[in-house]
Every structure is written in C-alpha cells, then in structure tokens.
Length: 284
Image (tube, rainbow, N blue to C red; front, side, top):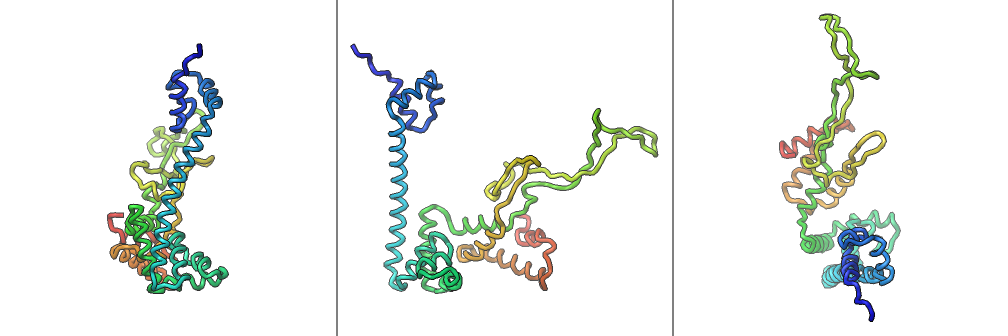
C-alpha cells in the first residue's frame, strides 16, 4: 500500500512560492534544511516560482504599456503640432532631456540637438502639450508638481549643519597609563593636561531628512555622509520652473537676486548660509 503524500511538502512549497527562504521554511515546519532543499529539487519548485515572477512582471509591463499608449494617443490627437513636435513631446516627458528628445525626434547630431532642444521648449504649443503630459503623469502617480519641485529645492539649498555639528573641543591628553597630569604653575595643584581637537558629530537620524542624503558610510577613516548633488538639483529647478508654486518661484528668484548682488563683479560668495537664511527664515 502506497504511503500518503506528506502534507508538509505542499506547505513548504506554498511558503517557498511566496518568497520565503529555505532556512525559514525549515524552521517554521521544524524540519532539517536539507529536507526542504531536497523537496525543492525533487518537485522542481524553482520553475513555478520563476513562472510567478514572470507573471507579475508581465502585469507591470502591461500596465506601463497601457499608460504609455494613452500618452501617445493623446499627443497624436493634438492637431496643433507637427509629427516631429509630437514625437519630441513624447520623448521629452520620459527623460526631461530636451537634447535627447530633439535628437530622437528630428534624427540630428548631438550639437544640433543641443542648440535646438531648449528652443523647442520655448514653442508655446509644444510647451502647452508638455505641461499637459506632465500633469497627467503626476496625477497618475499620486504626486503633485509642487511636491517634486519642493524636494529639488530642499536638495539644492540643503545645509550640511542640519546633519552634523562640527567645531573644536578640549580633550584630555592620554598616555599609556591614562590621562597626563601636570602641576599648575600658579596654584601648584595637579591638573589634567588637555589639548584642542577638531570634532564632527552626526545628528540623530530621527531628527533629519534622510531623503536628501546620497550616501552614509563607514570607512577606515571613520563615518561620513554625502548630500545629494546640489548643482544637478539647481539645474533641474532651472529647467522646470513651470512646476513650482508662486511662493516657490519667489524663493528661487530671491536667491538668484541675492547671489547676483553679492557676487557682483566676479566676487566670491562669502556666506551662502546667510542668503539661504533670508529666504527660508526660521523655517529652514
């Protein structure tokens, strides 16, 4: 008489297909990991997991494809644009790079595209269509234009002192057997010898906006943090001023005016923090 199939095999298989690791499955079912691994090979679970992943991936692709097709159809229906202008709009909304979009739409070399891409963005009809596409995409992805604009402002005007505190401190001079003691020449009393050192202290992660950090790492010379690229954020803001609110645009304009005032005749900016303080006040 044949043995009844082990119900635990089906249980283990289901857990595996849900993405659990073999060691986790073995622990939950109180089995040796080798047993679960043998079941996986014998019953070819890997093939079924691959099929499930492919199915999920295909659904995502279909969703993205439908959204892209919808964008294309709407642009094609716009009779105010030429065929190449329509293609430029479709390419631009996917990369926000006018040069690449122009190069693809008009099939020209890089230098020609670089010279004409930004000019194309100045075309009133093209600009109107791009704005419509932007809003449609943002609505579909549950973000507002001002939210995205604000995030780039936060990156562009980030202050390193929001994330760390640096300065100097007096610390004891240490020898092999502990702190070095010296005699005070005035009082004759023994006191601890100190020295001044440079210090850097990170602020607690719970008190800062970690989304603006590009990197936090610990190396052989200690821990370090790196802010997201300020220049890239400033360039993005310059290219997408239409997405900002009036208040956000005013802050950018004020920053620009203050910078020009201070730099004047190619002078260096002596205190960028002071300028940012005027823009953000105490809310920065």
